[in-house]
Image 1 (cartoon, rainbow, N blue to C red):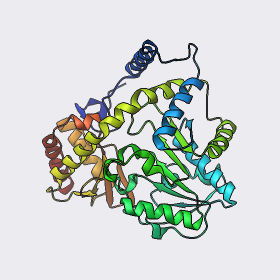
Image 2 (cartoon, helix red, strand yellow):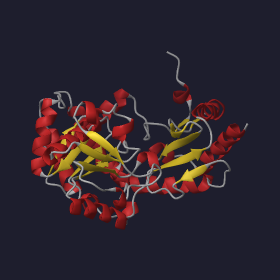
Image 3 (cartoon, one colour):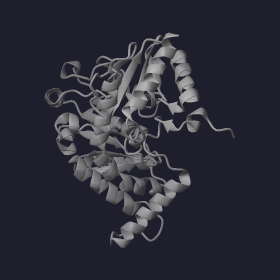
Length: 364
């Protein structure tokens, strides 16, 4: 099979965002981690199984997020659908308040409705974080994504986040956090703890494969009563296979390392965003990234942006981005850029040079 254009590039800034390992290398690293744990006296099941590793990860996440309990899931789609179902049933109201850029609306084939019997009311503006003023009525649950991926990784400021929590509490609306990328939020919130950020939410989902770079998996966290109910639905929907243990232990292997690296990723994002802001026809959003994710807004079609990206890859050996989102307009794209280990290792000038040529191609 011929090598793909992306794989042929010497600098690959697409997913996965950390230094790439082959499947064999990933499993070898996981094996080394498990052996190290055993040597350090950490009890690891002698036989293949999920229960022990899951308890370790769930306890770690509950403590980190400041919740009573947590539950491992193979995917965020399953975790969030179950969260929506539980809150809706407890409220006897199937309506969800969702931002127009919500993952549930864009990337899940509307599973919240087909699989869980929920409906959606869309609130807020695409390029702006949700505000407390956007929340009204008596829905079954309000979803808030921190940070909002399709808004360029934006976050509400701390004061507004507290207003959102208070608004939902006053109205009696369960508040759920889509915290897939929660790991990148602390610096924006003056390094408050994850528990402080999560406090006031009735449930929260976090991902292990996006910013953390693990093989997969997620956690849903909340009260013990909520998690007990979620566990029933995970069983009913087949969400815990006997072969889940590599994903669970890989998350345990990487979570502390990636959290420690995150401030450097965010500073790098700010640095490269600032370095390209002088290039005409490119608009960074937000101008100063809130997290390690930002968008470069392009007044061009998806096809032309893809063509320019592929030219840069062919001529310079740099793969700039996997994503050119054109949800907002067919003649406007949002180029997604995420900083992980690979972008951290790249010089800012390398990126500037490539983006300057990219902009020239868009104008040609």
